[in-house]
Image 1 (cartoon, rainbow, N blue to C red):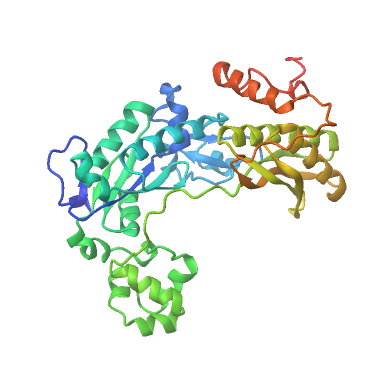
Image 2: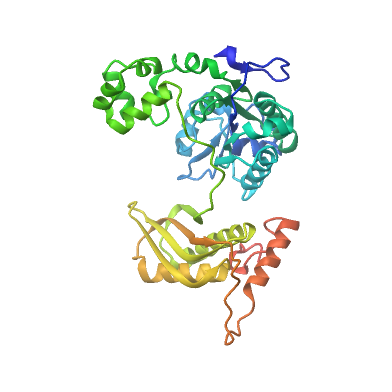
Length: 405
C-alpha cells in the first residue's frame, strides 16, 4: 500500500480525479489533546483514563499500543501489559472544544461534513474544488496542516471515490499520513485485503466467509452473488458483493439534529447512599445543562440510567411541562425518578439524559404565580464565567470539596 501513501510536503500526488470523498481521523485524539500541555510525555506509553479500579482506557498513544494497550480495555489490564504506562485524567470539556474547532476547519471547505464521532468525519469536497481552486489530495494536505498548526494534533486522511474506501485509506495512513486511492485503481487497492476489511464484517461473518474459502476481498468479488446470499443471507451477501467490487452509494450526510444529550458516571466503589447519588446526579445535570445551552437546545424529557452492582440496568423517564435547559429542573426531575423508581441497592453507574430536543425558538413558558428566582439567568451567567475563567470558576456549593468550602 506504500504506493498510495503521500508523504508530508510531497509535491506530486497520485491521480485523485473523481476522488471527492475524504475521511479524516484524528490520531490518538484524547491523548494528543492532553499531550499539547504535557510535551515531556511525547513518545511515552500514555493513556487517558480515570485510573480507578473500574476505569477503562479512553485512548492510548501509539507507544502504548505497541504493548497491546487498546481503547475500551480495563485500565488494570492495560497496566499489567505495560507497567510503565502513564495515566492522564481526562480534562472535562477539552475534547469537545478541540473537536468543534477541527470540524469548523472542515466546514470552511465544504458544507458536506458528516461527523462520525468527536475525532472523525467524512467530507464530500466535489462541489468545492472549483471554488477553492484545488484538488481532493491538496485539500487533504491542507486539512492536515491546519489541524496541526491550529490545534496542535495530528490527523490522518483517506481520499477515494467512495466512503468505504476512503475510511479504509485513512486507517492505512495512520499515524499522521494521507493515502490517496485513484478511482481507476479502487479494485487493485481493495482486492488483496482480507475479508475482515469489508465494512460490516465482524468475527462471526468473517468465520462464515472463511469457511466457504473466501479469505480476501478478491475472493468475495469473484463469487456469484447468489452463492454469497446462500452463505450469509440476501441482505449481507448483496452488501458485501457490492463493496468488494468497489460500489458504495452512500452519500456524505451533513450532521443531523441531535436527539438527546446525556452524561453518566461509573463509580470506583459501588454507592448505596442516596444523598451521594443525588449529588452525582447534580454534577451530571450540570454537564448536560451546560451542553444544552451551548448548543442552543432544550429538551422535554428527562431520563435516568442506573446500573447496579450485579450489572442489572434500569432506565426511567419523565416528560416535563415545557422544554428546558435549566440544571435545577433537570436535577429535580432526575432525583424524583431515582426516588420513585430505582430500588435500593448498591449502584455501579448512574446517568442523566435529556431527550425530545428543540432549538427553544418557541420561548420559555412562564407562570404568573411563580415567585422562584430566574434560575436560567443565573446558569447563563455561570456559563459566561466558566468560559472566561475556566470550568471550576463557579459551581453549586454542594459540589465543593471540604477543602474548597
